[in-house]
Length: 249
Image: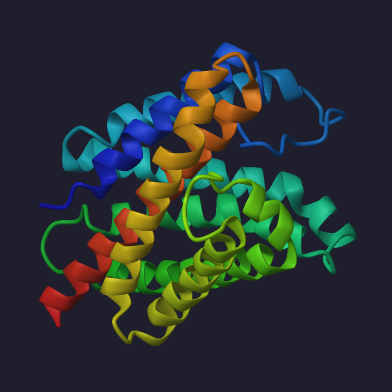
């Protein structure tokens, strides 16, 4: 049973609710420029789309498909709003990481959509293949960023976790890149997606869940938590897509 889309739906609802509670534009920890026209209305609209789209993805195939497309379009919009910053800072690693987050979420939603057709659908299968390629590239961007900002990444690792924070910062960077290469090459692609999903879940449980419980009034904790769980859901949808592709093959 493909449940990645339902996980995605719950993560979307959580992000939308958190953004509404803090009155922030739903763009993870990287809101769009404040001078953007009618930003407050756009922010409210995006939060409602997250919640409505998340609910839809838990319903029947047709409604779930509409929800998946709506969420994919929303994350593409978030990416478009970051485009000026991407052009300005294209030589900086973190710029590509920030661009990769909404991109990965968008293609995760597209992978979910690709599984909601009736019977064999060559068009949906092609969308899924392209989405997985883009997702693999996003993972490589994440992994490179881990090494480019190794000391900062290490601070996110619980100090009590052996053998060291630097070790896990490097290890998670390697996993990102390895999973990205596996998905791009098709060699053990589903295994890479499953292990990546497990890593995201572990990171969410060990890092952001405790931080959010400790300080639930800090927006950044909720932002990072909801971003992590949407990445969990996106990776899960990619794994489901790969499993479906294997059965068709």
